[in-house]
Amino acid sequence: MNIARLKNFTEVVRNGFNISATAERLYTSQPTLSKQMKMLEDELGLALFTRRGKNLVGLTPAGERVMELAKGVVAQVEQISQLSLGEQLATSGVLRIATTHTQARYTLPSVITAFHHRYPEVAIHIHQGAPAQLAQMVQSGDVEMAIATESMYLFDELAAIPCHRWGRSVVVPHGHPLLECQPLSMADLARYPLITYVFGFTGRSKMDKAFGRHGLSPKTVLTATDTDVIKHYVRLGMGVGVIASVAFDEGDRESLVCLNIDHLIASSATHVCLRRHQHLRDYIYDFIPISAGRRCSSI
Image (tube, rainbow, N blue to C red):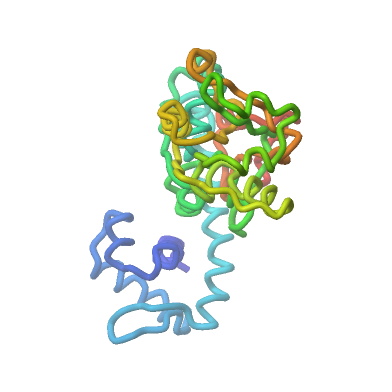
């Protein structure tokens, strides 16, 4: 069996049966890729795709079974290829990380700088996006890992490894009435317009659930994906900010006050998200910030 055709078959499926986009990703032509898919069907004696005219629109039942098996075969072949390069790539190469602004700006700098000191020949590429987008980047092989809080567990092809837990804080300007509330309650927060993360970012769902448990429906006047944007609009007086505690810098103290609300909203876990069955280069083991020091070669 032609392994290259099998690999290209999995790429066609991952790219939503878009032959043109898949051909571009594989640096080949659309006619060549279409011919390879037909040759694979002929080789197997199976109709793998459902078609609408000349367009591929899905998999047949046989195609779905072949896809499940092909993913494992392709992963094993990739591991064999990577093993032959293991020694020379152990201390040089590229590490592509998909993450959110909060992680990239506030959590990862110490990890990345320590990693860079140890592996100065490894170039680090950071891709930012929404958690669901980050997971898709890992699935498609565009990055080696994603680091985020939300949505990681929704993708069966990915292994989401708990990395660390984090809490939330309220940020307000100096002199704000909330500073007089001791202890601060969810009802206190609900009395003021809120500025926080877009749903799907940085543990937003837990905050919404906490308000819901108290029967409260706060007024959210502004949402953003960037913590610095949230703090800026708090300074402008638009509302009360709810952010990840780690995202409050010493430099913010001049204009803002930070109130910890771990007693109101449960902490969230940040995960390192990896594609199952992929071979990880040695230097990636040292990057994964897992307190248990677990190695991930079997993921």
